[in-house]
Structures are given as structure tokens and as C-alpha cells.
Image 1 (tube, chains in turn cyan, orange):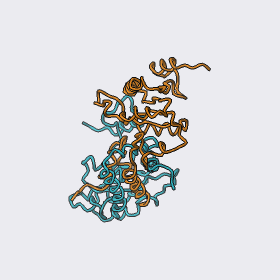
Image 2 (cartoon, rainbow over the protein chains, first blue to last red; image 1 turned 45 degrees about the horizontal axis):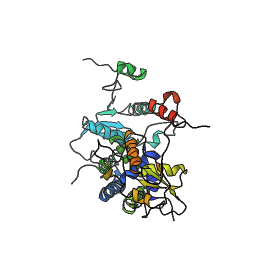
Image 3 (spheres, chains in turn brown, cyan; image 1 turned 120 degrees about the vertical axis):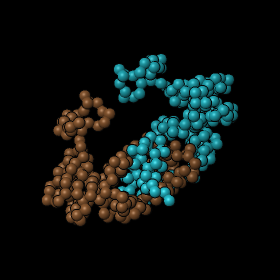
Image 4 (cartoon, rainbow over the protein chains, first blue to last red; image 1 turned 90 degrees about the vertical axis):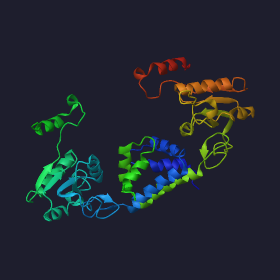
Length: 198
Length: 198
């Protein structure tokens, strides 16, 4: 018999979630006891539902209920614009802006010699084929603005050097609403380099 | 048909957890997709398990698999010592110290005129009866060291004024490992008041 209380066991389970420490986990477990049973069951079902029903899109690497995903399958999306992102989380962030009507290619990571991530570990093999299809006119690199993201963008721009497409990168600059005096030097330098005529 | 993706729906569900904002919720939902299906199912089962199996102890207000709870039911606990705590979370915090072998009384909240919490809203009715039982020799007030917690302790000390028990309160003072120079004035004053001979 397990003498550990179910609250403790649940807290330990919740502690596995990213960003949830032991204290938050206990707080969540105790809070859940105040919910309706139906609400708890609904959340539990959603978790299992996501895990069993969501698949990876064989075209772009996005996650969804269908393969191809709802974005690749949407005839209203502009197939001449292909945005390369590192992760599905980043794809979803771009989607929330509602400012991009093209399609995506999700790498599933960033190149990182330190962490042993090489080009073969990323969803790169199908990218040249997608471009060779002829529909794509512009490849927009939207890799994370970090050393690894920049290295990945660098690799991609070399990979696509010979292809008959325009390769662009989303702008680095000052975040909207931020304090210029507090901006780090690199961001400020990139903002200067990327200045545009008004 | 619901066009919202299961990831978004799960993220919305997770957003209900205390301390989990919309961004953390999305991060957790995406992270879960990398888990084994069995792991997700286990956590989902734990959630439903806690909600359906855990009950409130009619003696002390603690939560557990049995009623009376495992603490009230444990013959090794010292029934002459009764600690009053605001919440089950606080009871669990005291239990983790392994420094208290008495029993508890969980109020289920704190008096707060602002939030409309009056004595009738707390688990107070059975407290005089428990003390009238004659076993209890000391009631230790371990309410939260806040305005509301102090008001609750004040109320309790009046409520128990005539009872044949000693009423004590756990010490306020400097947290161990903290910086005296950074302590707030109230804490430092209480630490001074509570000084002990070495």
C-alpha cells in the first residue's frame, strides 16, 4: 500500500509540468479540491485528448488534429510565403498576431553544437523539396533572436543560397513599449542597423 | 464543431490553475505533447482520483482518504496539543517540519470583513466542543502572520478565554537565513518583543 496521500502524489505529478515548482504544485493540488468534480474531469480529459489526438503535420511540422494540419490544408493561406520557425510555440505566437497569412515550416529546434543538435536533428530534409515545388517566392526566417537561432538562420540562408526564392529575416529591434535607456547594446545596435525611412 | 485546437483548449483549461498564466499554460500544453501517453494519463487519473477520493475530516477539517483523517486517527499523536491553522496547505507545511506531534483544527480560512468572511464561515463551531472534551491542554494558534490571520487569532483567544486550556501563538520573528538589515520594521519589532534568554 502506498501511504503517500493522493494530494502529495498529485502534487508530485504536477511538479513535472514546466515552470511548476514543488510549492506551486501543492498549491494547485489543493486548489483543485475546491473545483467541481466535473471541471477536474474535463481538464483531465483534455490532457489525454491532446496527447492521443494531436499529430505532427508531415508537410510543415506543426501540431494539429489533422495531417496535413489546418494551416497547410487552408486554401486561403498564401503559399508563396513560407515562414521558418523553430518551434510550434513560436508558430502559435505568430498566428496570434493575425498578421501572417502564409504557411510555415517548423524546424523542431535550433542548431546547437553545445547541446548536440545538428542539422540532421531538425525538420530540414523536406525544406528544399518544398521550395523546389516552385510555389514559394519568399522564405521568411523567424528563428529565435538568440545565438542558436541566429546560427540556425545563418545555416538556412546558406542552404537556400542557390534557390530561386527571396530569403528575408524578421526584424530585430526595440520591443514596443520598452525603455530605450534600458535596452541592451546588441538589441540597440541591431535596431540601428535595421532603421527604416519614415 | 469546435474549430479551436485541442492544444488551445487544454491551455485554456490549464490557465485556470492558480499561478499559471496564459503563457505558462501554453508552454505546459506543448510540453505535455512530448510526454509518453502513459505519463499524461497517469497525471490525469491522479487529478480525478484526488477529487473523487479525498474527503474533509469531520473532526479537524483536514483533507484525506479517510474520515477521521490519518492524523486524527493516529493513536501516536499527542491529543493534549491542538494546533489551529487557517488552511490545509498550512497544516501540510507544519507536517513537513516533523516538529509537531499534536493534532490540528483547520479553520478553512481567515476572518476578513473586507472579503465578507465572518466566524460563521469558518470551521469554528466544533472547536469549543473539542476543547470541552477535556483532553486538550494547550491550543497553539498558528494563523497566518498577516492582518487577517492576526484578527483571527485575536478572535480565537477571546473565544477560548474561559476555557481550561493554555492558549499560545507560534513566534513571529526573523526568518532563518534572512538579512536583518532588510527585515521590515514590523517583523523586527515582533522579533525584539519575542526575544528569549539564551
